[in-house]
Image 1 (cartoon, rainbow, N blue to C red):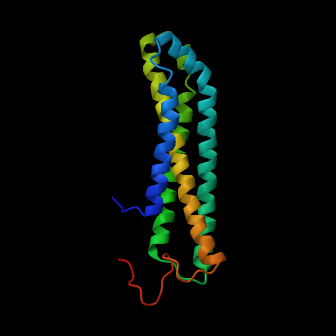
Image 2: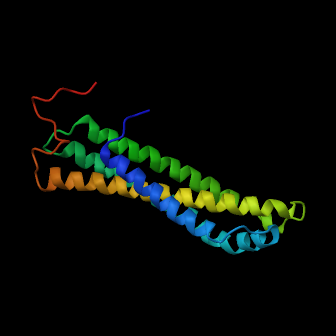
Image 3: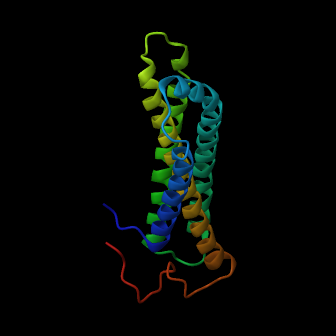
Length: 179
């Protein structure tokens, strides 16, 4: 597994905290019966579908903006270290995973499960908790991506915009090339 920079670790912790906060709010509801869960699924699905749509749109936009960031990085007068490109690649990987998962979940959540008479009502409680758990993970994931992107943008502003020559991501002649 690749070693994460301190910025990426902080971003992942931020996403984990966001997922825990959104998940905790749901667990405060307590245990729900199958019939209650069926009603809650019916009322929460439009919001979860909107969340999936928003995350898919945001992820696609972020991937496109990462291409712009790479163009800016390569066009910079300062030569950037390999670590910068690894950070951008980490953002792209996590963002792509979020994009794919949100599209799949959007499709799954559009199955009219609450209309089925074949599904035992005891399953609705498990389905309800699974949808809320997955939506919490998606929320935490997009928070992590946004925090990672924020750190990368701040670094680029410091290096390109403010011309910091002693920034840790700027390559100097005396530095060793990473393997």
